[in-house]
Image (tube, rainbow, N blue to C red):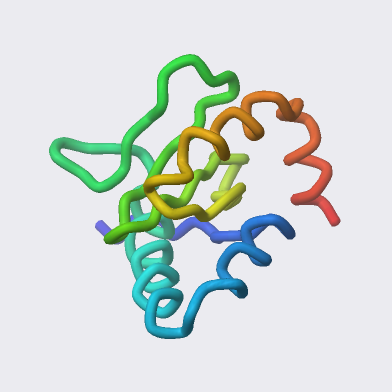
Length: 110
């Protein structure tokens, strides 16, 4: 049986994050996002994807080299909220935690 593919959507902030990267760093990151999050966005076994504790609705992190992509699942879509370097992850997570989850649903519907 073929797995259902989910649609990956970049929020405006995540799109800006990716656009600000050098091409050599952005291409493998976007390929990993598509490869892992379109098919299986929820962690299974030893995975590059991790569900982060303390976030409602659930927040997931994808590791790709020195970068981290943070996402939420909304129905049959995976919304990428932010892309950051590993060293800047803590600051970015604090900003994500401060924003209401309903805001991401509104961005998705635009």
